[in-house]
Length: 352
Image (cartoon, rainbow, N blue to C red; front, top):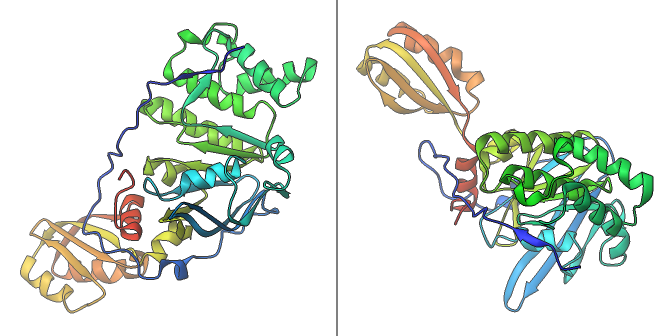
């Protein structure tokens, strides 16, 4: 039997998400800013401790550590060359670390790689399937690699096909599948043995927004079933929507880790308050400038735009000032985007 053909055509697309406002320089000594986790219950299924790896003179990993618990989606984000691929390679058992430890469901990957792979499902960026086979036959092949057979394997295939919404097309050769269908089948191949750990490496690259959304829903369903998911992506809106926690890695080190809100707080990010109405511009500007905690970005007769930390604590005072010197018709609070936080922490955009 020949090797699976890579069904590609899914070239990388640059992130199209703009950055609002001025982006500050990277955080000084960011490792000291790593906040505590969010307290998801259960013992970590993925436990990475002080991993180090060098390729020649290049120190790809400089002692990274993180843990992922059952039911959690952990987003591992970083620019190209940051260390993501090396980390994924170690978790897959394809790269041996120079130091440190990585465990899947309590199994040391370096010491017991075969046992570790039994609890691991991998969804690679490139789709690798047998194009002349049907979806069912592809899943039967991958299931047998994990030692499954007979009625048990057939039942698992039925369940996973239903999970990825391909039951009605299961007997067709996949060479006629759309890009989104191939992606869903690629995910199914990583799930057929019901793994406790799922590694997903940019599973939505090159897909249309509707298909991307359906795959994100599928990832959340996988986690809700109890799997621990590590998710890498160049689409920062996906990470913002999907991930319970995020780890931003660059130059082989995790710069900061936590929930999106914790990352905002760690970066000292300021929220934007937008007021629309009728204002006495000069008078409002003078009054707001008496408060150093407010940074006025824009002032006109129709709009005021300013940034603060913890907008909920300052909104009443700002409305009082604006209302005393005009009338407020509309108020909006904008959270800093994940992309602006990313650039502040790394000093460069994710796609570089």
